[in-house]
Amino acid sequence: MKIFKKASELEPNLVSIKDKGQSIGLVLTMGNLHDGHLSLIREAQLHNEFVICSIFINPTQFNNENDFNSYPKTIDEDISKLENIGCNALFLPDIQEIYPKGLAKKKIVNNFRNILCDKFRPGHFDGVTTVVDLFFNMIKPTNSYFGEKDFQQVKIIQDLVKINHHNIKIIQCPSVRDKTGMSLSSRNSKFSNDQLKIFDVLGNKIKEHINLLKQNEINNLDQLKIEFLQNNINKIDYLEIRNENNLEITKNYSEARLFIALYIGEIRIIDNFKLY
Image 1 (cartoon, rainbow, N blue to C red):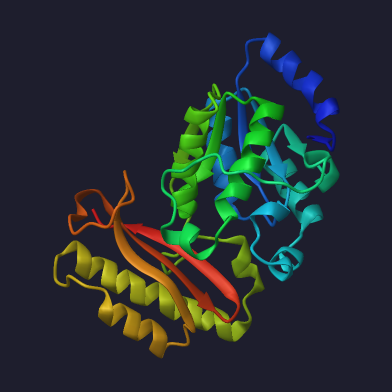
Image 2: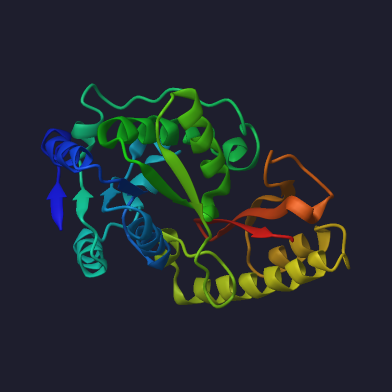
């Protein structure tokens, strides 16, 4: 696997691949890779001749400096995982490479805003779209792969591609889940043993309520909120059922998902679950 730290070094390699008529699959990550990330790379490998993964912890999408500084960094393990899976290239830029004129972000997408994570993390998605736009312009992949765990992010990036006329297909991939049905997340590696137990209870509670919602045996989420708060979930940002196409609140579950964001200690968990 080739490792590139500069876009100027990466570009001629990508031009050579495109000149051969080969497709390029891109998986954007912030590192601390787990099976969810690797599943995106495997999906990219099925449909592209060349697959590149990026690792860049983007400062402009964090709402506080402590969260940015404490984000888990496991670069040696990440490189080993990418080599083992047969990824063709890793783009590993530093902050100066991506933001040579200093940190900055701009609002590109207006749809799917002021709800869910955007409501509780103002400016977060402006940081996301800014950096994704930069990476798309640098790499110009054929396809780019994103996990459904960050469902609102996927919708916003799909809009970004339309707005800025990127000739890139966004591939939305199902979440990889643990035994309790919760999506894998890099932040979960920071759980203490006690927090892991709370997380397991959380997953099982959600699974029970998802089954009840699917069977139309309950029609509100008040009981689930109560059970969360009784099980050491110290803050709930949102617990909502929304249509997966327009992200509007709905009572029609035929194309709906349960969206959650809550905290175990200082660790924020987001997830979503199909109700059909």
